[in-house]
Length: 104
Image (spheres, rainbow, N blue to C red):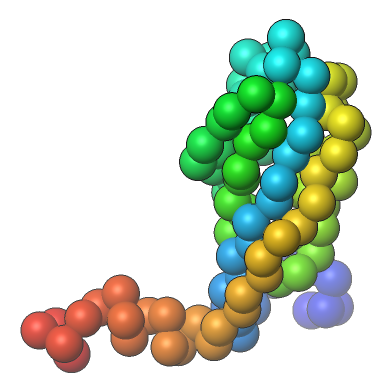
């Protein structure tokens, strides 16, 4: 089967990425921007105040983070979207932490 065949199972990600994005927006557009961000998936608005939002994005690679940040930046009412934090860790390490010591 060719490597790009649609039936090929996706490879498990080697890392899991999380990033924090500071979004500056027009305050009157806040409800629309919040709804559009929620519709993206893998994105969560944590706080909002006077035309600023702090948003986190999670995904299996840096490309997912960049795609979401670009999509937010291009939303009507958004003036800027800037990454202020980025962390990646091996999926195996994340899985061990999620399982916890009692289940290992």
